[in-house]
Image 1: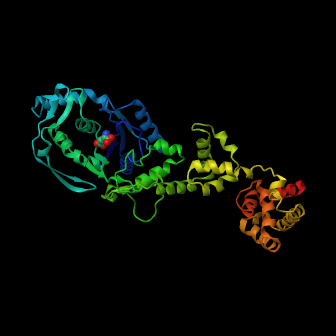
Image 2: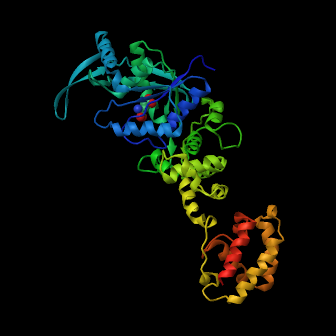
Image 3: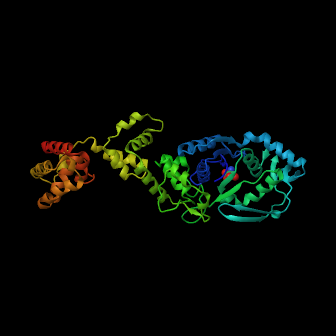
Length: 440
Ligand code: GLU
């Protein structure tokens, strides 16, 4: 346990927050919560040209949707005065200098850090001891001007000002760490703990990128994924608690999360596995909660609870069991609409003339008799099949089961008649068979 933990998620608003990018935020969040510490969101907008307000909004909305609530919010550009102050301080102390240089467009001034050319060693919580000879970094640039610090400088100042104790971020930042440590030493700021998370790779082992498989969280939301499934799946990209179990809630993960159980080797992103996580989390929702989510998804976010009543209650457990996403659930809702209402055409009942009217009528009456003997509480697919199937086998399965199934569903295609009858219940089943028989 640590005395006080402060972590941060520091995305740049240069694109929508994607499923790979948010993983660092999830780990920083879980670590802070596990240790009763604080979690910060910092928007790193030092790159003025590529940073956009719409991306900042997307990041904030995505974190809200995921349920990664932060205790403090900062925007890097709001700390500009402090960046300038410390740049001037380093220059005054002879630890940095203004350098006049040629770039492609003429003469420019940049601020360079005076590299003490030393060996830097740190112990990364995930990767262990790492040593760098910083000589090759030369006198690196820390700002393009007093109001344009580069990323390395701004990160160090902000992390220190915000009291960040643990820098948790992707392994692609390991090579940046020595520069940032040199700047810290020059400013007299103590080092935080570093934990660099394993790379996330696609199934072909190439780095997961915007072009390769890394969809935005907002896209996953629109595809009908649950935030808890994304959270769970992402947390398992490089971490897992002891044991075989995979489905965890946010609270449970926070309780279990330690950096010691984070792996070094790359984590493979597999969309099929994510889909499986989603299906599991859908099944875990209460019927009530599932209806609410589906209503929101099908009718638009922010819609009122009244929409719930539009769904037939009987459909909910059925759909929950079968849908992998809310989008599939929405389809199933349409597909199972016959459970709420039915209209049966004679032609379809007789399979377009393939079955004789008298035959169909006779079988429907026989089915009624057989079903009347089944108790209401016993109206399960198995029990129904047990009474109907021997009769159907004796008298011709197609001629018995087709009219029965159409009478119940009104559809050319549907689940089998036993399943539908069980979903409808005894009363509604008998009612539908009677009215189909009457129509003949
Ligand atoms: N802004 C950096 C990024 O988006 C993160 C910096 C850090 O975590 O130190 O990659």
